[in-house]
Image (tube, rainbow, N blue to C red; front, side, top):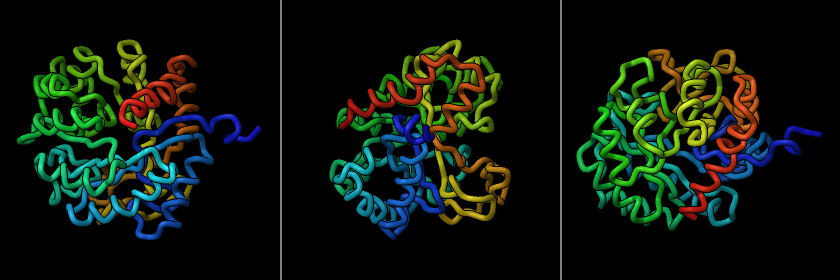
Length: 298
């Protein structure tokens, strides 16, 4: 039985592209190629994630994706930026990052014609808590991440309505960084789901075990796949940032920081099995919990 026949049942809430293309591509055929790649490698539904851009450019990219949402090819759009912390920007252009405003969020939602299902926000930014509450009121997943916030910032964000953590342990403090950090607050003092990039590079096996022991039923596997998923090693880009992929690991050319992944959902599940997670937790993280979150915003 083929990989697709076995595993084309997973839900990926955080995916930027694959087979050489991003979901921001101006050519609809290239967007469809990226969608097809992931649907042939374990994914049944996905949110098309867009990285930080100027707002006008982001609007153009959103408009290009609306037909794919209307046709059911994607479950919606995830805006990962530009409302992120400079200190934790990862593979986002720090010069384009900004604090959110409800008026600008309203403008993006209007352009999306119902397709925008998730927006990632660093909750310590000015007006971020008000925006998180607004998104929750509009049945849009208010995800928190790419944050240099504190223990208290995390708890305030959840109180405001945040309902997901963008790639937990990446773009934020790690579990080894202390007892009262943004990460430990989310793990130990909240009940919201935690995205995990399950590729063996973004989160250590030790941390995966720790997270599973405390919040196994809150894990959600995501790919955070960039264009190089399904492609050979080489030179790529994210926005206008240069990326080098070596042995399947994508890193910024400028500083060596991880720059998304080359994962498929089938590979993420296989790695979770390799880490010794039980099948019930894996099924919940790869399919059941992300499906539940989507049902709440569809």
